[in-house]
Image (cartoon, rainbow, N blue to C red; front, side):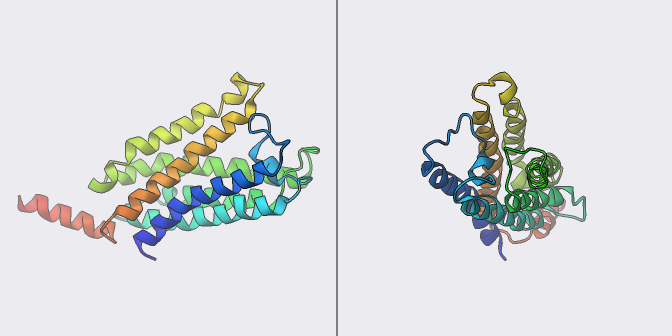
Length: 216
């Protein structure tokens, strides 16, 4: 696939997640974005749980994993650490896991709830690994250098708002939405950057840059 194809996947994935979230939450009048976790749209006792889990988590996770491959191929210039690749790719894989195993919020010790929790936390932890290791690779490209500051801001904001539930215990779920927002904003922003990147090979770009510097 080309950069544009991978870029489109990165752009479309957050839109897909948001669209499914709006639809699924709107058909449940008792569902509150302030007090109910996102996963409760697909909890074990939820109506239409497989619609949310299939499109909100499983498909979204698969698309993130695919996008991770294209993003790494474009940003990486030379043979280097694969932590950025594994981080974002496994973030998508673990999100898929959280959709395969619906949360049982009435029995938090159940196997399905433990696996769901593992998927949720795993997705976020691997995202942090990928997001914090990408700047080292981005510094090697004149094009991607511009993305370091925005992506790090988005990443740190997910951590900042991760403590929301402890500060505002009456509306704990709102913080989770904000974390999701900046998580997907990271995907969306890098997707746009990837889509707009004219060169198909970051390696080639680096070679041209070195030639230009040596010739000047």
